[in-house]
Length: 76
Image (tube, helix red, strand yellow):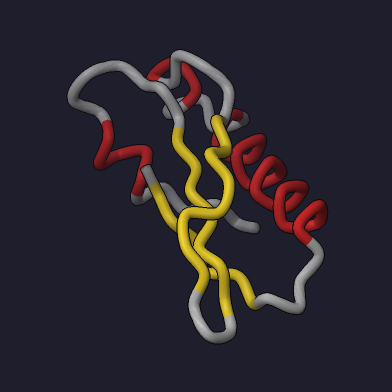
């Protein structure tokens, strides 16, 4: 599960769109895509702070490959 802080003034639909675009970029990587078992799962807003919400998302992937996927450069 990865959390991304997003300013409260941002459009939630646009945030989801950007998260999906980043996931698509990861899925286009020939080294990473075979490790991922399912599409991006967006859990939604995990918490709200004074000026930001934390969105949670995750991929389902093969065992023991989390580090390689989580630290992949996204280019987004």
